[in-house]
Length: 172
Image 1 (cartoon, helix red, strand yellow):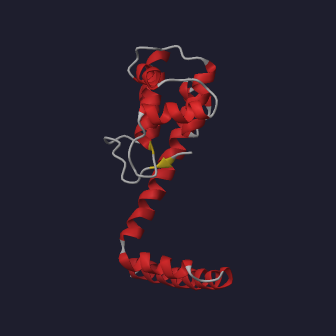
Image 2 (image 1 turned 120 degrees about the horizontal axis):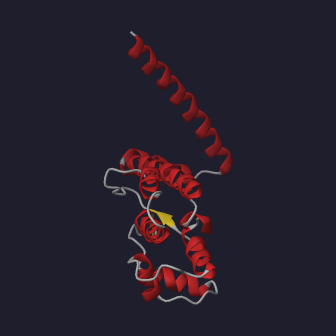
Image 3 (image 1 turned 90 degrees about the horizontal axis):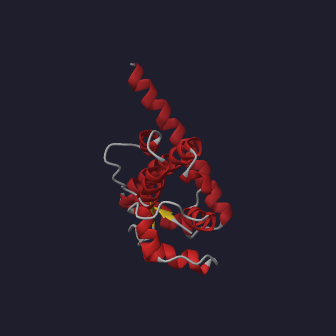
């Protein structure tokens, strides 16, 4: 249901560090901070932050009545005691367990996984920005599965050779 954005600005903090920062805050504060954090890190396929209306609409379509204004109130700490159904709807939309909103250990674990995904996506985006890499991927996409496997095996050999060469040059 969600898409993580590449090139995310975390203002110098990793997700795990942000969770650590809110451990000592009151539960109402944690909910808003963590919900806002999900909005900031989990993005639509377009790379844009989901709007409150987009999230509310998706949760309603899944069967839980919720409004965009209620989500706004949760994010702004105007409402601080959501129902379990609302928490579950938000959690499902963002692909996290409902415990993320109130359990510090779960939040640290989820944030650590989000950081790893964001890092990998940034690496992938950087590779895709390279025209040669994009062309290789497009051509590979036109191959049969068997031929793609052969290309991957060849790339693995070339990659290992290059890594070995880099290791020798760093040692020498």
